[in-house]
Each structure stands twice: as C-alpha cells, then as structure tokens.
Length: 274
Ligand SMILES: Nc1ncnc2c1ncn2[C@@H]1O[C@H](COP(=O)(O)OP(=O)(O)O)[C@@H](O)[C@H]1O
Ligand SMILES: [Mg+2]
Image (cartoon, rainbow, N blue to C red; front, top):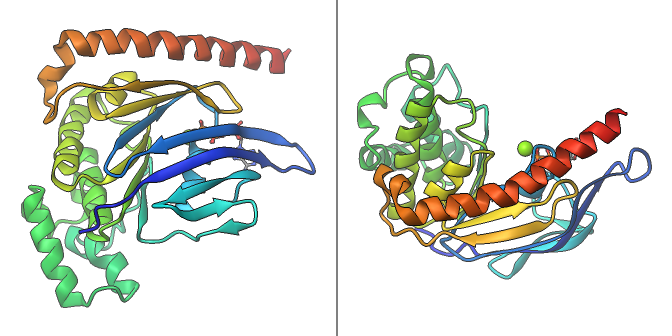
C-alpha cells in the first residue's frame, strides 16, 4: 500500500477565460499538506475550492504557481499530469455504474486500466469490502443501496486503486444528518486504517472539524488561505468527540472566520446584482 502523498500547493492562481470573462477563481493560494494528513477545505460557495481540487486531480491547468505531489510537479502553467490512479476523486453526485454489482464497480477501474487481472482484482476487492464491512452487499446493484451505502462503495472503489491521495468534493452534501453521521464514522475508519492523504471539500463546518486534522478556511473568491486550524482532537474519533470542550472551542473559531467571509461573499453578490 502506498504511504506517501505529500501535496504542496504553491502560489497557485487560476483565471478562467483570460481573454474573455477573465474570472479569477484562485489567487496566490499556498497550502502544504503532509503525507497522511486529513486536510479539509472550507469556504464560501463559488470561492474556488473545486478549482483547486481540479488542479490537483489533473482536470485542468493553472494560470501561475505550481502543485507538487511528493516533490514531483503535478501542475503548472505549462505542465499538467493527467488524472491517474495516484489521485482518485470521489464526486458529490457519485458515479457508480447502475448495471454493475458493487464488486464489479469496485474492480472496474484497475481491470480496465490493465493494472490488475480480473481474478486478482476480485480477490483484492473481496478483502477490501470485508475490511470495510461491505461484504454483504458485494453482489447488490447500486439501485438497491441507500445513498450512504453507495458513497461507502465509492470510497471503497477509490481505495482499490491504492491512491496516494483521495480527493473528495462535498461527497456527503445531499445527505440527511443521520446518514452523514454514519458515513463520517466510515470515512474516519478508512482514514485510521489506511492513513491516506485526504483532500476534502465541504460547506459543513462540523463535518470539517469532526473529520479533519487540519481545516483550511478560504477567503471569498478569488480563494486564498484565510486561516489554518490544526484540529488537535484525539483519534480514533467517534461521535462523542462532537461534545468535547475542545471541539466546541474549535467550532467557535471556525464559525467566526467563515462567517466573516460568507458576509463578504454575500455583499459581493449583492454588488454584482446591483
Ligand atoms: N469553467 C469555468 N469557466 C468560467 N468560470 C468558472 C468555471 N468554473 C468555475 N468558474 C467560476 O470560478 C469560481 C470558483 O468556482 P469553484 O471552484 O467551482 O468554486 P467552489 O467550489 O468554491 O464553489 C466561480 O465564480 C465559478 O463561477
Ligand atoms: Mg465546488
């Protein structure tokens, strides 16, 4: 299993449509993420979080700056490493093939890419699904599963590639509070087991603190780092962490910083509409 996964985001700027609309989404943004760190990014809607994730994933280039993975350049204005199995993205809306079973979905990527034979992938998937408590559903189809279960399968599918980095863009956004609680504990269990580097975007401040080792609070667009919060809550964490004094202290800190930016974003929106 790969254990590295250190990400350096250095002075990154991203301007969409420079010759037309000229939308500056990210401006001189720098973030250091240690190998095995659970880094959560929060910030107002439209501030540039997904843009940053897309640059790491290799979905688009950047206008200036560099992104490195384990000291090797991933992305700069004149270079881009295409998406690969070292950086797997779990999307907000999910992407399981409805006509494949859970097991078939999980093995699809590595088999199609020729990284694993069908039989090796099946064996690895069976072990992984067992470890993650998903063995009972390995022959179910996505349509038979709850949203929380589907999201767990997507995370398992990502892990079969043994990525260095897991990139999650608001993966639990549409879920109700109870389902979220369960998938949070699942992801924490995955993190404790694998110690993968995780880059996780969310709007939900409580989710950010409960999951993350570090919370990066972004400014309103163009995004820059406003505040870094080291989340020193002990691991393994369970739902009880959410009632600890330290959690509540950290929550106040994060709420204040985000509120300031949300107000600015709102006022900027009002100005744009005026
Ligand atoms: N392909 C694009 N072309 C032009 N503008 C874009 C494009 N993608 C995103 N944007 C703009 O860049 C800004 C940041 O977007 P995004 O990174 O999706 O924000 P977030 O994920 O924080 O909500 C937004 O104002 C958005 O409208
Ligand atoms: Mg987004």
